[in-house]
Length: 263
Length: 281
Image 1 (tube, rainbow over the protein chains, first blue to last red):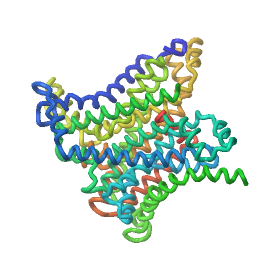
Image 2 (cartoon, rainbow over the protein chains, first blue to last red; image 1 turned 90 degrees about the horizontal axis):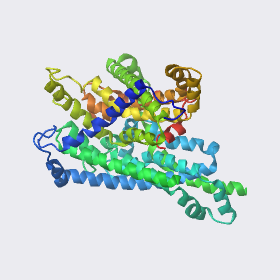
Image 3 (cartoon, helix red, strand yellow; image 1 turned 30 degrees about the horizontal axis):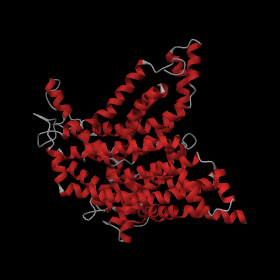
Image 4 (cartoon, each protein chain N blue to C red; image 1 turned 90 degrees about the vertical axis):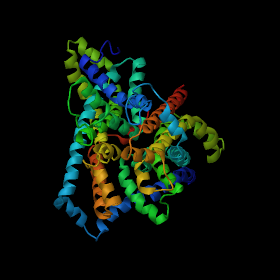
């Protein structure tokens, strides 16, 4: 224990451990359920079985949804990273005072509930003829992914020595050259971090999708949502397990990036 | 003049994000606010329903009650967790942090699905309780307010921990050691030294969890099973099922105003940049 031997007391430890179990156990329960040999949600009766995974990987509906979500997340991440990174660099260089309002604007999607945005989008995209179109969802997810990029890139810029940039400009480098050769290489891990979070954001997003898509665009969260509301079959548990594994892998990648940034 | 022209290049970097944000984010939301005072007819007719319509009032009541319970429980559990993390050795801290960060990033749908698997009538919890003989009839654990609160607290604890932990990490641990050394009991050291210093983080966490809960859609919709309506689901019902745009956008506007008002009210305690920056760092 740190702090000259002052650790948390037994009461705090008890509550903390209980909370940890409360946070983790429900998520891990999907693993045994996904291995059930029954046709309904239950623990395996006789022996664990992989039939629901087999079911998942041969189902065109599930695979189609996975691919749509993947391409959507990729496209919206590219857009969010490009816009968000440039914006973070601009705000950083212009200083807090002058760019405060712009930064606040970029954080809005984290604060305003997505249901409000989804309602507005439904009407707005109707006018722009973007309903139920890949481009429409990409734009919506990109815009709401920008805050994650702005935050992570700003964090890595905070550790960047501004004199390097001034030196480059002083020696006659153009803005583009300074960006390309001085700033971007230094903040690359921060950008990658932002990309990971923007990707997860789009990959998981459901509320906007419920409003602005119907048949042509059908994402994975939408498919899970329908599954929960209509038939709770154990294939869903298999999907849940794969999603958990996927998220943990992305978080692990982010941790590695952070470590590289710090060293 | 030269400086101004050089700055113009940096301002231009803000342009793509600014355009995307205004045209595709701010404009649709401003439109929501506009619809609430123009449809079905111009005026504040929709807002008058706040005073006269028992349905809306019930939804607002449920929303506030569930959010208050969620915030209180998430703060309590989150505080204990942050306290233990803040005082743990660095090597142990990393594992505790995983306990917070992994659930934070796992799909909200996966989590709601897990809770349904556990809590429904034929779910694992009821099966277990009946197998042990603790209950004869399955308990009603989901598709009511209880289920919603269980799922929402589960979602919100990590959001409560991050700002509180950021605050607690700035508390010098030697203060606690000094208090103990001067003869204070563990309890007294906590109550008179640690707790007051951690209050700003606690308030920030409370504000964050409360405003996130207010507009939360997915978890209440799944775990409430359509029987317990909260604000977000009621808005969806008005727009997509009943096509009453005026009413739907009215409550959406109320939601936004309530959230922004809460933030302004607490802006002295809550540094948003730090809060959201801290959530990922």
